[in-house]
Length: 72
Image 1 (cartoon, rainbow, N blue to C red):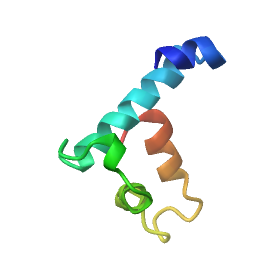
Image 2 (tube, rainbow, N blue to C red; image 1 turned 90 degrees about the vertical axis):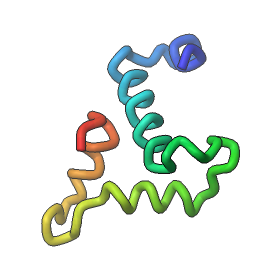
Image 3 (cartoon, rainbow, N blue to C red; image 1 turned 120 degrees about the horizontal axis):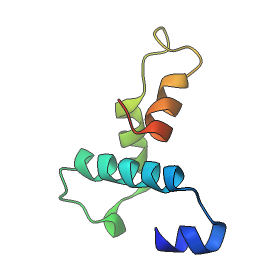
Image 4 (cartoon, rainbow, N blue to C red; image 1 turned 135 degrees about the vertical axis):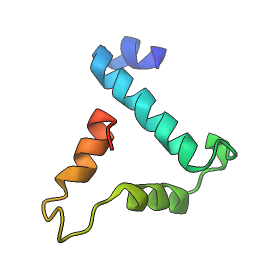
């Protein structure tokens, strides 16, 4: 996170949201999987777990809301 601040001068909210998302991601795997060991399929599985049904959210705004605000 410190490199975000120096490289792209990210806002506090942006960094906070990234931390929240990484925590949610880690909890999804019950804190048992190292970030080094995570594969593409793991990321897709996580994203599918927070995605709402097409009939409920046809514009997929829910996924964006969860990712960028950290709220589910």
